[in-house]
Length: 141
Image (cartoon, rainbow, N blue to C red; front, side, top):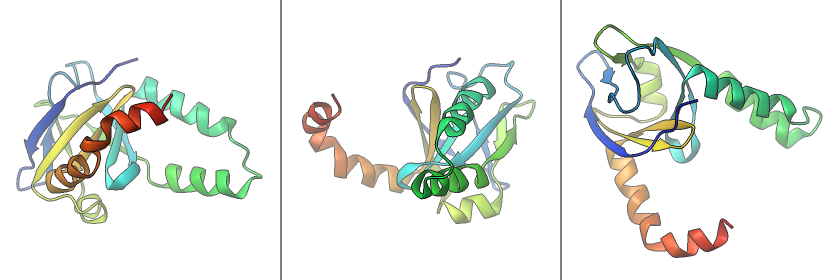
């Protein structure tokens, strides 16, 4: 399982292709699973980590309405992104529109996956949350 860390700025090309940083994907990676993330981003998983996420979803109680809604929203958003020979993935126009992703993007490592953010949205997220770092650390224990 991959562990993901760091922040990377990228620019989408005119076709919506995104160059994945080598620290987030090695040359053996053939595809990723992308799905709805939190706070408006896309969450991107390698197969092994994606399978672990699916196992967590399968352990949820589908008879519980909240769990069922989360499972549906999550699984219905899943797409496979193939990595081309240049280490790029193609984000569809529909995906870019749905997640309001413009030309400039920020990728951040988040332990078992990485996220794709519109650069402006991520900068706004940083401004809203960075000042609360110590408070967030205390609440997350």
